[in-house]
Image 1 (cartoon, rainbow, N blue to C red):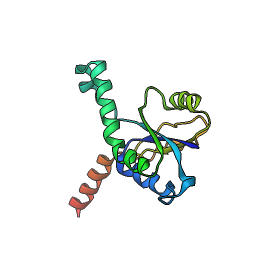
Image 2: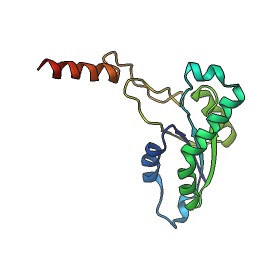
Image 3: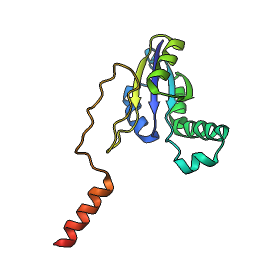
Image 4: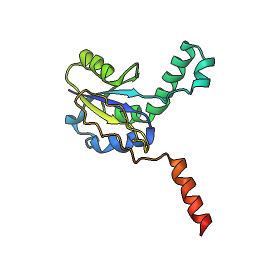
Length: 152
């Protein structure tokens, strides 16, 4: 049985990435073991200051279960074994830990790409984009567009 480790930070984007990988329903060769790993957004400085570590951990786990619930039901309907985890620490180290537990596995990075930031790699050999110094935050682009429109 093939094993997939899937990193998720957005439910809709992950569905778009995983549905094409699924075999036809009723196919016997499509059974696999799926490990869905949620990558919740970071809490901002002010929120993190007032929440205990236990409350932060609980929020991260609840976020992961909400982000993966549709995928879990879909994968289980196809007869796959599914487990859900929340990422703990650096992604490369977490991937090594999970691979050590399950053996050989395919790693799928189904995280939504960010416009102004590069995502951290999930494996040591994952190709990484070079940081683009020309990337501007969305607010700067929007403000410059407003200034150009106002000047005309």
